[in-house]
Each structure stands twice: as structure tokens, then as C-alpha cells.
Length: 312
Image 1 (cartoon, helix red, strand yellow):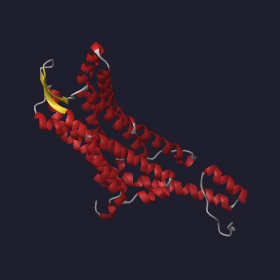
Image 2 (cartoon, rainbow, N blue to C red):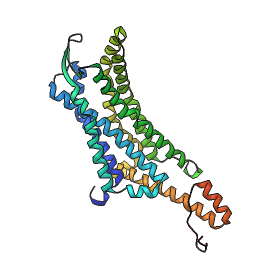
Image 3 (cartoon, one colour):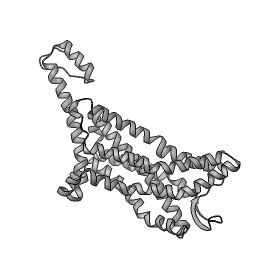
Image 4 (cartoon, rainbow, N blue to C red):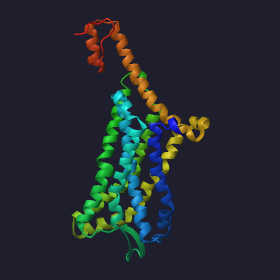
């Protein structure tokens, strides 16, 4: 797409696709690791691969959060949303997100090392910490910033949007984009949750001692590769979600169907909001001033003075 055809929504989804595509490029390394049960690519690839993985994790959740905020503003603060939905503004926000994600992923680069595991008789690319405190900080920080803090906020924002749109019977049917974003959220939670559970196990292992600590540490090491592979699979799922959400648009518009699907979202939401506001204003015009006050309170719409009304 060129020029004005680059919508804000398309820019957001393009950046999410870049984050997913980065992980997909790393798939051969991790398939080889799981198949051979040993790391054969050296220390440099080990550090870079897992750094990019964590960068994708942070970037994905932050971009998904930005998409949810975009829809929240479109429903609850449409005029603020219009100010936000400018390419230059969104581009700056996305640049900040990528820089922040890159900085937050640095611990993954710093702590990853290639070691020889005598028990497993294999070479493994895994996190190595000089102290228990470093391990607790690393795993707690990663899970808090990438999952426990942003994801509930994203879910709450999206639930409020759905609740608002369903208040009227006219808005009972969820659009395809609403289903698509909900599917992305659920998929992200399911596929990334095991990874963060393993992080929690590692933190617990470092907070305890004795046989309990040893058992938890072994469990975490055995589960880490599988949980990471499952998290990587999330990058493969999003394109499938787009295809199922708009198969008819794909037949008509080809590879541009995502743009058509998502670009229709904001227009649909704004149309719903405008329709609701127009309905309330129309009812006020045929009622008394006392009725208008009741309607303003009931619908949460601040109405300006009507033609012929006296200014206070």
C-alpha cells in the first residue's frame, strides 16, 4: 500500500506481523534443537535468537495493547480517537514500543549462554545467572512486564468495549474484527501462559532450598524448551486467524483482505457511536427540556444547545 492507503489500523497490524515474522525466521533453529536435543549453532546465535524471541514477546503484547486502546477510545472517546488516529502519532508510538521492547529484552541476551549439560549429555542454550537474585529478577521482571501487568488491562479494555456495543439490541452482533481481536487475545494467553508458568517455577525454585528447589529446577529445565516452542507457535496462528475471520474478503481482495477487514472496524465503531448520539439528539428534539436532561443522564451524552434554545 502507498500513501493515504496506509491506514492506522494497517500500520498496527503490519507491526504485529513483523513481530510474528521475526519469530518465524527463527523456527529452523528451534526445530533443530528439539529434534537433535542439543544446541549446535554456537553462543552468538543462542543469544541473538532468544533476544529476538523476547523482543517479539514484548512487542506483541504492547502492540495488542495499543490496538485495544485504539478500539476503547473509538467507542468511549471518539473525538480523542480521531486525534490519536494519525499516522505520524501512531508511528511515533510504535517506534517507542519497539525501542522499549528492545531494551526490555536485553536481559535475555545477557543471561543466555551455551553450556554442556552432563545429566542430559547435550549442549544447551539456556539462561545462566550468577546468583539466585539475578534469576529471580530476570524471570519475575519478564513475566510481570510481558504478561501479568499488560494482559489483564488489555482484556478489561476489550470487555468494556464489547459491553458498550451490546447495550443496544442494534449492537448485539459482534463484528468480525471484534471476534478476530478476541481470538488473538485468547490465543496469546493460551500459547504464552506455559512459558510464564515455567518462569514462575524457576522463581519458586530459587526462593526455596533443598530437594524442593532441586526438583523444581529440574522440572523447569525440562519444560523450558517445550514452553518456548509453544510460545513460538503463536506467531504462526495469527495469519490463520485473519484467514478464518475474512475468507470472503480474501477471495475478493487477495492479500489485501486484512486491510479491508481491519479498516472497516473503526468505521463500524464510529458509525455505531454516531448513530447512538444522533438517536439521542433526535429524541431530545421532540421532548421537553426536562426529558432532555433525563436522556443526557441515562445515555451519558452531553448535548449542545439546540436551534432556538436560549443560552444561559
